[in-house]
Image (cartoon, rainbow, N blue to C red):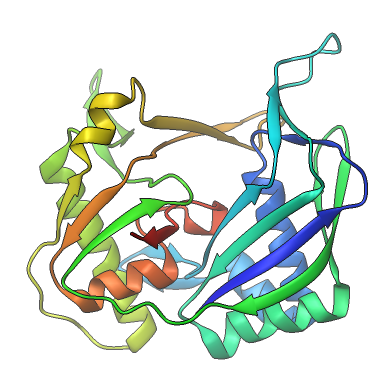
Length: 268
């Protein structure tokens, strides 16, 4: 199920460009108002399959009107300056009886959402929340990304295996990693295996040719002693293959780091 939450800032303010981690924390906080036990389980444990952990939700935040401010004299990092107080939070999960139910309960109980950073606490009032109609998923779908798609694998670097974030031209690895990720999510959602061929992802070539850069770096915990840089891809794509796997990706997010606000799409 997919929800659209309309937000309104009490003051026109600045939001860190790397807002993913504090916004994810704000979502968990709303879940705690719905069910402290479920929020603790999802945050601390999550759903585990094949030694991988999944949260089975994703989100994306869109501002009505914002401009990027570079580092100021005090050394603060890049920020979005809100020229309008209005923003929209999209959130999606296939776990309707647990995640969706508790999140909705939390929004009615709290009626606000706060994005905390080292420099400020940005409070948004929740003015409305509604569910979107179900999208019919077929074996060939074109999507645009509401938040970057993150896929990674291990590669040898100076004799050590290190995490490598896939780029658009890593075609074969993208199909393999994406398919296995969705197979694992399918197992967790439906508690059964699925026998399927590998999905095929094709990027929008016109978009790639007209944009100098389609990768985006997002830093998690940017003010901590050990910040984490994540590299995602932001470009439309067509996905062909098993519609059941595509449906899972549409609901839970495609790729990795979904609970940090990555891999959310809308159908074109």
